Image (cartoon, rainbow over all chains, first blue to last red; front, side, top):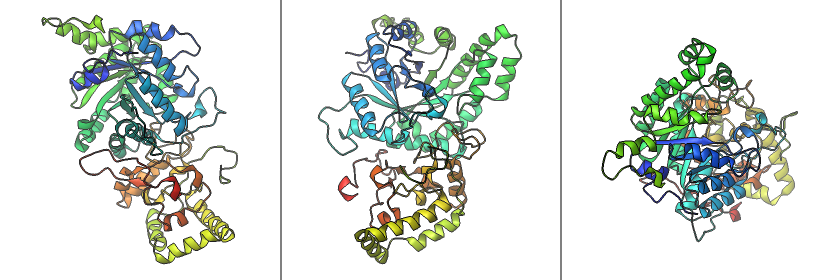
Length: 326
Length: 181
């Protein structure tokens, strides 16, 4: 299983080259359809550097992120395999990390995970044997020291890059930059954030990260996404833990007729991306477009970010224009 | 796993400490490890019945004051005496991303996030830097055992570590190997 990540391409190559990276999100199917990931790949392949393959997101059962990551690789779409502490103890977490290494999954992303209470199996046992910081730490020692958490050595270490997440908007505000600093100390190479709607609050958090020197060690990828409808707005505000939507965003969505809300949501998303590209230390955006995946290319094209845009810019030079080779 | 689970709830619930942080730090100096406590600890470990009584006392006190769940590897000195094991996700390295704007727990929205409480207490007592320490994973064999005895025996020394020096990544090598526990 070879990867479009020969060093220069892929998420790691993009970040290393200092290009503005773009990742998106692909939810594995809730069945055994082997073609589902391929359909997302056909849509997103040329537009993003990698996609997060979510791990029972929202505590709802889906195809495993490892299996779906493999399907993404086969479809020519670089996966970021999410791995959550909610459903696995340290043995299972490490064995999935080894599996991802053997299958050539180029990126893994460590999460604590939502509590099962709000999912489709609220009666299930929450595991949380490790927390997100400890899982990043274990992954980093596995890769760099070739050691399991037991101290046991492994002969062939994995080569994936290690991702993590942070929510810049949740209390305690004074601790959120330091919390990412802990994850970077534990070994995170890149971090994706919760949805950014409040740019001022996000800028304060980024300033804190720069002050702590975090952005020198870790690529910060800001989470964005279009709000499709007023119902979606309500759901994100009350049904998704940790999302903060400021009043001016809500007023703008409520000010337009119902059939214009989705387009206004797209406009807002494009403007947010454009503002984020100007913030020092922001290495890319992570687009979460639940139910609107088809509009991701449009968002990226209008915002002027992502591999397709980079290739277009490069094709004006003699060597450019080869993005179909991926 | 422990008999201290809240009635009617299978999960840990955020607990607000009943002892002010300053008083807790003062209490810690009374219990700080020394040669006498160390001898007491090894004596207790040789007397199973006494150990059980001692552990029951520790449980009663810490449960009333901090909502202790007897993980046996007490993090209280590094969390401004706010028990992270009462977090429904048992997070030992800080809050999850689901804390509400008002500082409420994602799982129990009627309660404050224990890490918001810990941060407030640490800030007010000048111990905020403690929250930057990296907390190692728990040894789950220690549930129900006395963390005071473990502490006096020096087994707690590697529960947490700081990121120091040029290398921002500390090692997770099992410094307190299974044999010690």
